[in-house]
Length: 227
Image (cartoon, rainbow, N blue to C red; front, side, top):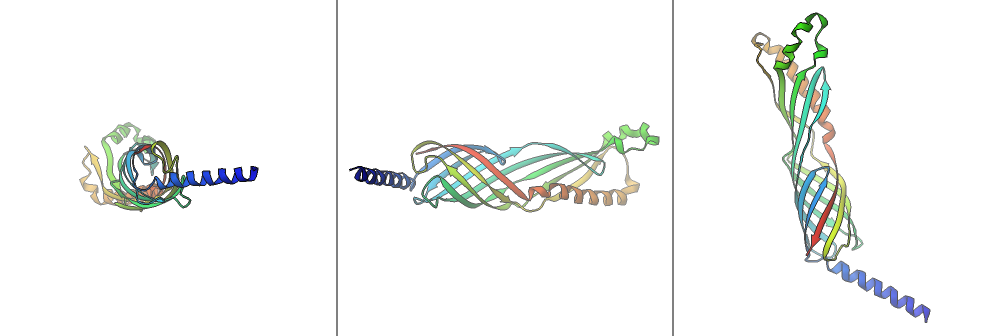
C-alpha cells in the first residue's frame, strides 16, 4: 500500500512538472531589469517548451577618474544596448543556457586635464594654465557584440510574477579612440607636431586602459510577468 502511494505521488509530481513546462510554449512575458548593463526592459516569447526568445533594451551611464601619464581623466561610459537572446532550458525547468547578440551604441566620453603635480617647481606660478587645457575625445566599441551566458528563471512555465537572473559575457571588441583633440585657450600653433605626437601616445594609453571592456561581464536580475 505504501509502495503504491509513493508511485502515485511520483507520477503526480512528474505530470505536474510536465504541465508546468508545457505552459512555456506560446507564453509572452514582460520584465524590468537591472545589472552591469544598467537598467532595462525586456519582452519574451516561448517558441517551444524549452526555447524562449528574449528581446530588450538596456541603458547605463556613469563616470570614473583615472590618471594616465600625468593627465587626470574623467571618463564617462554611456552604454545603450539592444539585445536579442535565445534561452534553452535543457531540463524544462528554471536553469537555462543563453546565446545571442547585442547591438551596441556604447561609447566612453574622455575629458583630461594636465595634473598640477606634473608642473616643475620652477614653473609653479604658471600651474593655473593647466585648467585651460583639456584633452577631449570619444571611445567606441563594436556595434555587434555576441553574448553567451546562463541563468535561472523562477516558476518557469507558469503564469504570473517571477524573478530571473543572468550571468554571462558580452564580446564587444577592443576600445577604439576617435576624435581625440586638445581644447585650449592657449596658442600652441608653433608646437602642432609635438601636440599631435603627444595625442597619438595618449590615444594608445586610453585604449590600453579601456581594453578591460572588450570582454564585458554581464550580471542582472529581473522582475517579470508572464501572461
